[in-house]
Length: 331
Image (cartoon, rainbow, N blue to C red):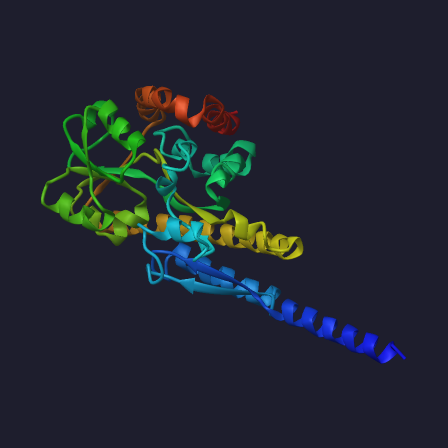
């Protein structure tokens, strides 16, 4: 007598469960660059792979070129869960954790391979989790490139930079870096950097090859020293509560996709930097100065006081871990 009722209730529950399962998780991925950059392409690749492998379960909406949120408000939007994925430059996280300043410490890492080793090891992974009390979870490091020094005069030794003014992005480490050289700094937005170099407001800057070429800085900077003295990176981040609210099976699949996309983004960024270095060389407007091992060591020694100055906020353990990846490469 009760069987039809039980069957009907069971059917209702089954239909409700199916409806709930059918509701896909929406991930809004906002970024501030063009779609044809390594970061822009990475966002589109993430969307494609997610929708191929998790059809009907996860939908990704990509908003490039600050169309959803800009540099100034994207992290607040992430905290409010108005957006679920961002990839800001590491400098943007300074107010949440000072530890990420390790990547700005001048001449700490030998090269990009050393940076990669550090980011894959325990201390590098630890930095991704260092902002969770602020509801920010780091998922991966995406490269823009190693920084080079450009100027109106050749910079072969640390003393050569004395008296020059350099354009920087806001960073205590970068101010200290140039002060150590006897140089001054001006905080100038990236979009205005070319004009400041052209009109002489500043005489030098630090940028990856791709930035130098895309903004035509090589046309107003007769000398570029290949210093590889720091790294300009992005951190792919999500809202902590949102990310760990995703069912474990789906989150594991997303993490695997992020690993694949990160590899592609970083490969493309390095390829772009090497191609733009070659374009700058062929343009002939700038002399590219390559440091000898002895000259590079002189720069590193000149910069050690900056490491010491920031050790209390970054952590001696993190700085030591960064030095260790260099030593392993040398032996």
